[in-house]
Length: 207
Image 1: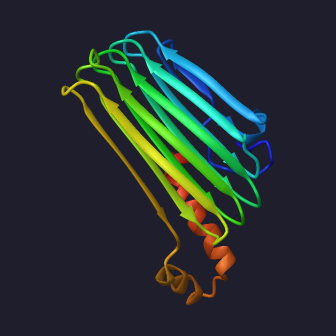
Image 2 (image 1 turned 120 degrees about the vertical axis):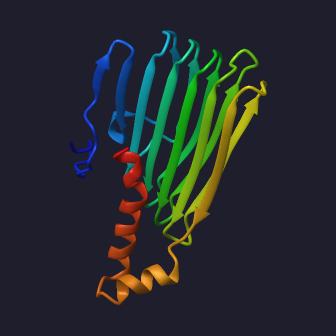
């Protein structure tokens, strides 16, 4: 499948597996200046997997709220954000666990080149009545330019002791050792950074 901008990426096709399970893929070209979504999983054991792929362009404002309102509901959300030139996004995501034994997994990854800027604020909220729930929230940025900016703030609000929740974030640059490895094999730095970017985002688009 190709994105709206023609760049080939290995992305699973959008499909509906069963009445209680769906996979959704959203590309840059399908969004305008803003992206705002409110999703409620109301059926028992309902599953949703949502992959958002942004490259070359992206909404300046993204506001997503997902509520797990039925026992056993699960949401897996992955962001692959490849920033170039002056591409900028302010992203807010909230996943609310409102029923027992619900599960969420959010992974945000941004590879930033040129003067691109990504701001990600994620919140996993587990209500007192959501005993037995599991929530995971991860945010990572790969800085490929000294002019790029990343702001990552994953957070948790857990109102019950009968839940498992975790979050983490990291921001890093290609190491001199990595770049030397490519240079020693005759690979220019610009191409090396492109390869590192693809490897960094690969586990999101293929998970």
